[in-house]
Length: 436
Length: 188
Image 1 (cartoon, one colour):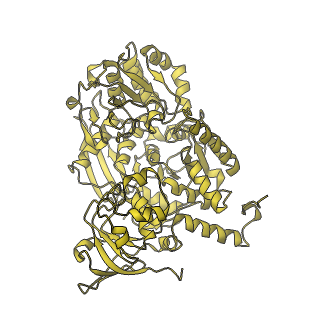
Image 2 (cartoon, each protein chain N blue to C red):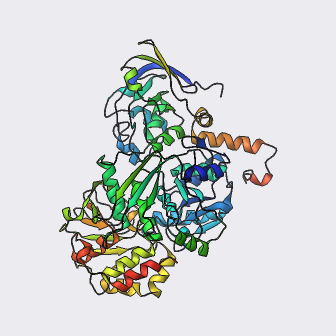
Image 3 (cartoon, rainbow over the protein chains, first blue to last red):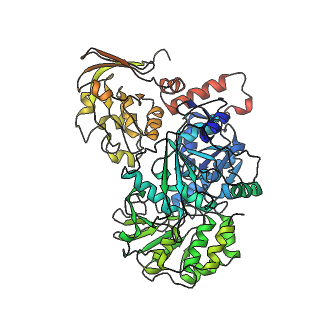
């Protein structure tokens, strides 16, 4: 019996040959990632115990993405604390506000998260690493133990394989697949429980570039998957090779690996999806939501913050204006994308359309530290989730859609099927070469 | 570890499936406030679903729950359970909740399919969390569950994540093998 990708990666890092799903192991990660919002809690705990050095500071990456703009005195104090912590801990890879960008995005773009890698992270959407065939796993504040000791326990997850069959139609995107999958799971049409499972995608994956692969990782994570794994294609490997900061060895599940279950989803007739307020599992075909008025729109987050997503947005906004009734925030995932926005003329398209471009990071998706909603307002966005109160006011109504749907809806002033908007062809074509 | 009791014997407190952590286990306000003080939390366990539970239960009592216990991925209530000396045995619980329970140092068995049909509320039950043995003295019934993984037992016996880390550091710094540079800096 062969092994799944996650079994192989955890066997290697835990030095446990032949480790299987269900076993508890202590992997030594290739990287330890900690985000700005949790550094203080972690350091206070270690200081209290008297631990003032990290086990492997050279492996630690500290990123500043959840609160980049410091919209409050408290946030500025936190930033100051984090800088001091990075110095005291001798953190190997510190990315201050304005550097790097979103921790679930720029390390893949920059060849720091590479195929076959395993890392621990405090934050849930470390699962994005699956877009290049790596694994990032969420620990919350337990990341503190890894900082101090270099490892912690993990029960090796079972893997569930989902075959995506067919080609997406124009106007339908990878985020729509995630919403649809969540809807199938929530309604028990697909009888699977993703808790502590790795979702491994298979099937017609060649159609997905790096940005679309990142988008595929988002919604399964909201449905509690411990990881998402997308076997890296030749094209993905070429891109990773061109950027790699370290050597890497891709992993793949064996043909005879044991999956908990395997399923097939036909995507060739998939319609754009809208996640109604409350969560990704509340998704419906867009026809059921068309016409819903919106006050606020946001394109970005770790689910839709890749350069391809920005090209998508520009392909709709070019030559159009955001509705005067809507404020649209665009949040690139990385400083690299921010530079390209300027170099390739997208910034001008956004500004002329009346959109607001925020610095790379989580943007409003981190509990609306920027760009919140007022009571009674509605939003459509590419945020990872739409839990009550995520964008401020608890009675605000939060809808989720693909970047195409959000861009088109921001122009229309209400939720609209993006297939009714002609997208700029040249910008759409640029997506194929966004990453290599 | 000699002082730690892996064996609990007490009254069964039976719950069904899908008990939510927020409001079902402990009032949501303590989760939102990120309260972690065991002395505060222990007075409010099951407060909204069963007022008076916290003063009625006794150390050694065991919560028996169905599938998806404490759903919602939070773990504030497990701090209260540990402070009250309770144990948990359930059919399943979300992984993040299970991690939180272990981190809180709670005696917990989370893969016990069918356990809710093996006892009734108020039964005299006994669980050894280290070996997995389970006895319902009221019904005269005994079985074995998958024990708590060996590598997590040390974590729980030392009192949970933070206490374990303190103990680890004390051992690390007292070991002669550790270079001086790794020791905490002397206070000025």
